Length: 186
Image (cartoon, rainbow, N blue to C red):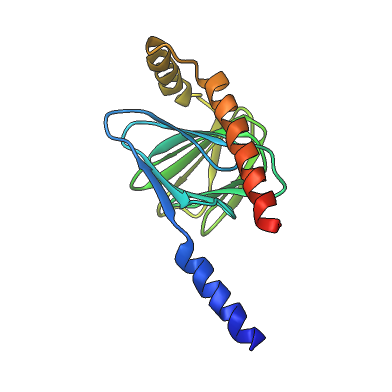
């Protein structure tokens, strides 16, 4: 009987997971994830993740800058060309039809492809192209900063500051999550 209850719970749990998706066209988008991490989506990009964001796995197509909240669980960005894994850091990922490029602003990240794995620190850019067996490391050109500056300029024109607003929202989301978690335990 207990075995069947476990299967029933697993089935109900899987049936209740909802995928969240965010797409941009000719616009930027700022997304606050359930764990408090922030995603800045560039034009013509998209992300998807499970609503509860546990495990911390996100799918990316296009380009996004991430500010990842430190946590004991790994934060993973999956792309068509490989996965990027971190615990808490700031980095940019840009994908297109034949490559993925990763630049680190702060902290350390790991890029893993089908053929290779590489650890990256600030000032290094890693590029993996389809058909190649290795990840190339080069000096970071910080190209992502241009679109991030443009995004900040657009938000400032709207009378909004990104960091303070997102941090406040993040605190509220975290508090609400803790209250719900406590209520569910009781």
